Image (cartoon, rainbow, N blue to C red; front, side, top):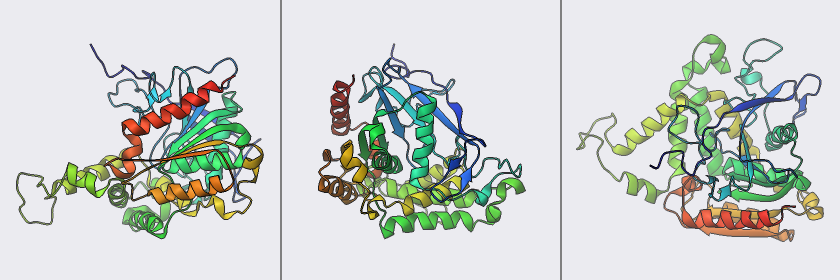
Length: 380
């Protein structure tokens, strides 16, 4: 009988490692330091004797370390279980897969809701602003903790793709290949605007308390839910919304009121409420701000290290993704190809917009599979 564990990595556990401490603090791109940095992570598959079959998964804005398999007692798999597992495009029969929560996150890695060892209270807005390179440094440290000096591939979608790009640019000798999916190398004004309104919804909530809500026993639940609702609108395409909801009524027929009358309204309200149980408002502020400032190609020497130690790139976009449209991916490709770096690009057809990178879309999965099969041939 088929069960939810079939073609899955099975039961998994999220672990935590301290990768920086007071004796060896993390120096951020801003110059600020963090003395204690813990990182939550999961691993799937087996690290081979040569330690050269590791693949790192970089998660998106509201993701976490739980990318595949099942936690004990859960029936819902990790957020990228469609693509990670035995016989799947990121095949755990070949690869040792590592996924970790981001610095600044709220799922086990040090962030603004963590306890500041200096004060004994949550950091709140005293937590330093972050850079994409800071995410990379923490995950590089996790790699060292696991005995991995080089990843055969670094893979990510959306914000995760941005981190994969930064990693390859900064430390090409540690990355064999990079798969950048539905990502951007520089947000447009429209993208920054969406994030700005989401942050304002949070910060203008009366329960935000200037970032001190954790110590004052409140939470900006309304603001965070609205931020999530608005962001979720950008994750689907108009075609996807029409196919899924159209103008259908939530309760049989429309009744003309200011409540939840259309099915799409109910869906967004559900997404906002569900988000409250798993994400923190402070992490939302910090992580979206990192995305706003990300612009690696602004440095004319950004690709110099890559020229000496080329990484093979696969860049993928989806034709209905209007949050990070294909033009965002083409911009990445133009920079990489302009430097004569080995780069493959493909636009995938999908009705589901930005969220397509999370879905089981045959052409998309076949492309990732083929790219990683070639990487497997390079293993020593």
